[in-house]
Image 1: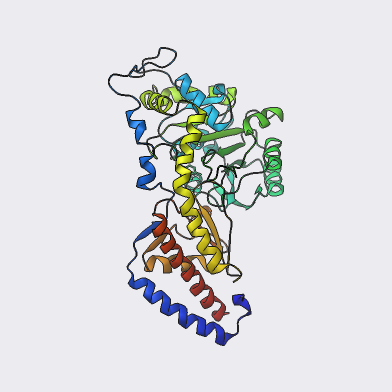
Image 2 (image 1 turned 90 degrees about the vertical axis):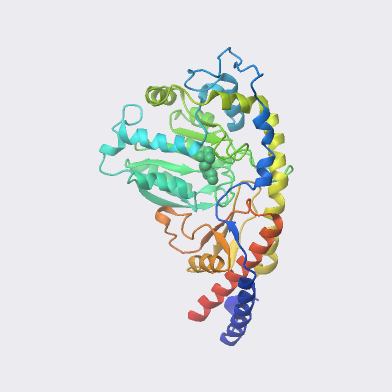
Length: 426
Ligand code: PMP
């Protein structure tokens, strides 16, 4: 029976039962963390061989003879470019391989646009107003970057096929203060949605009012499938933009953070020839070159895209039971009650849960009080403000499947309790 159809008496009886269950759950003294999308320790073991991929007796020269122990090579050794290009679905001439993480590249792109401008355009820092579109719910660290630079953020609703493209076109094609949009196009953080072909094509065919409008295409989960037989595919935004006559409109990012080791992977930017040349003018002031031994280590270990895919299957084996444990509990305990909605993703790192309006903060607080830490409610929106106080991001990767089931039990209990309280307060 839907909670909203219950009488006041029924709700009060239910509330008393749930309070009793909550007291019992609290007494268990759980201490679980579902707040960040971190791999578990056993999952990190999958990549330990990377540390043996090169050693003191290895040939430490790249394919083209570059001695990886020494200075030099601004944009990455050729085999690392090829590996990252294959992973991102583009070609090596579009790639710069950077250091250990992609968030840093994204920050750098915004920062450079702010201080020096993009391809000769006025630096954003000298303009009265700069705006970014933010598909919501989205990734809090993206929003933190644009907030840090005082860029005004505009919420764009997401659906299963991607951001609301009518709204995106309306803003981008008419407002020259709109300079960018944050996108996680595949297995999005947090919903796990993959942009449809139509969405990608509509992105590529935008007619921006601002010459320096850029799509920030964060393909963080490009090879992070959960299933062998159910894999999302996405069009290559770089070639779609080329076909549409907008070759310079996109900056694409990816890393091996959740392939090898978070914080010790390799990261890359993919973009047009003109953008790469513009970027390199600054990059050569910033660094003599990134960590080529780590690039070499990654290529020697994974060998090629097939090696990467095979490796991702091992990650998926560990992730799948955790996702399924959460989904099972959500379906059994909340299905048909009308107090929440969710989606079973085919990849990525998160499950996104939408509670009844005005309940998310209270649910997260109740979980915390009973020992289960979730990402702060609101974090999936710019400025940490979810206008409906509804969205909660669940990150199942870190706990064990058993812990995950325990945490999910507590979560659904808190959802029920807070929803009943909300309905009684109406
Ligand atoms: N982008 C997205 C969408 C992410 O979810 C994450 C990690 N949670 C990152 C980027 C961070 O990537 P990196 O470690 O390469 O900085």
